[in-house]
Image 1 (cartoon, protein in one colour):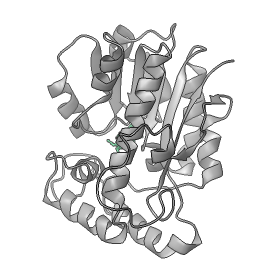
Image 2 (cartoon, rainbow, N blue to C red):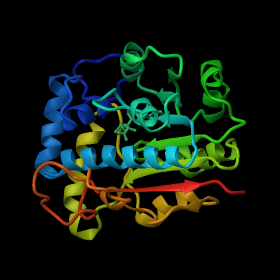
Image 3 (cartoon, rainbow, N blue to C red):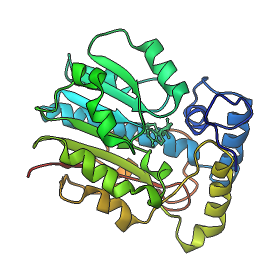
Length: 272
Ligand SMILES: C[S@@+](CC[C@H](N)C(=O)[O-])C[C@H]1O[C@@H](n2cnc3c(N)ncnc32)[C@H](O)[C@@H]1O
């Protein structure tokens, strides 16, 4: 197992693999080789990444339509065609966005694209929740006195149980005022029929800078504990309030929401 703490061009990088799956160009040969290997095991992996982004866009729009003007996107990933600040500002001009990622490459790329005072990128690890929230750059852009849309899409499956992922989310949401929202998506366990493929996927990610920890449906739903889950609940991302901008790409090779690589997503509001 190889870990990338500093720039290592030979080690596949999970953020850049995702960028390749999304059709981006901020990736290198080892990232593309690993992503292509992934596509051999899970041919719908690229479609799943696209569906996850489409879910994120619908969720951000939903939050903006419900009065949210501040967004905290943790594990934001490399900039892509449409980013959270563009999604949010399209629906609510002037919306403020803080991006956080623990990959220095992501931080550098984000900084390069941000030019307005309403959006900031910071380098931080979600496991150090208190440090993220105390960051002066965050507090210059968003105020924890008003509702915040906390975005944790396709990131918690990079956090092992030993690092307490549920506790991380609970700590984050405890720090948010009433009226704040949680937008979360997470890779789901394949189930017995997909066990062999899932083992191969985990093996591929074990060779990257970020091993993968898919979870069962009930463990994913548990991330929303203490919050009121918005309809239709925690569902395959493409089924969350689809509005016609849903899955694009090749014909699905298996029922959506099934098989290795399926991603569940949901949105919840803090009312107490
Ligand atoms: C698959 S990308 C998801 C990007 C985006 N959130 C989305 O849904 O399209 C996962 C990102 O989470 C970041 N990440 C993983 N573990 C993290 C952690 N503990 N703290 C902050 N970011 C993390 C990775 O560096 C990567 O950029």
